[in-house]
Amino acid sequence: MIGTRIAIPEVRLAAWGFPLNAVWEALQSPLYRDFDRGTGYLVRTRLHCTGGDVLILLAAFWVTSVAFRTRQWAIARGLPAASLFVAIGLAYTAWSEVHNTQIVRTWAYAAAMPQIAGIGLGPLLQWSVLPPALVWLLRRRPGNDAS
Image 1: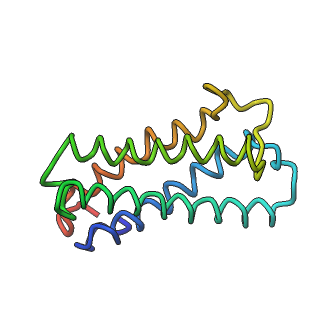
Image 2: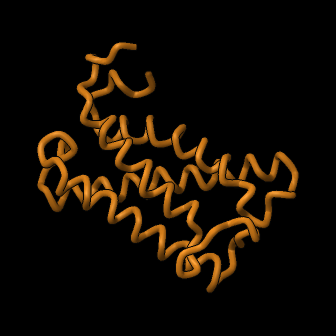
């Protein structure tokens, strides 16, 4: 599997985070107003968003690493570190969604996007589901996977 034989946690995080976020971005595309644009536009913008998602993951990883004084926090520090990692991603996502949909209007939700306090449920779920899954993948020891 992708990234399972690599010991550097940031590389493993990015190697797993990119495809998982790419799939999520593609699946939630109908929830955005630009979904009726051409395929090339959608691929380009969703890959751009996926790259941003990986940068958010890495930033949250590094803040968590500083807070827990280890880059191996997924293994060594358990639930408290994982909770901080998820909270950082969720907080940034909430801010980014409000900023981009309501202030600078970089993107807009389609009528189909369920919202909580003006924030799209799709992105909130993305940052509630994928980071814990990624922590689980980081906890797996490189080279010991049945792949």
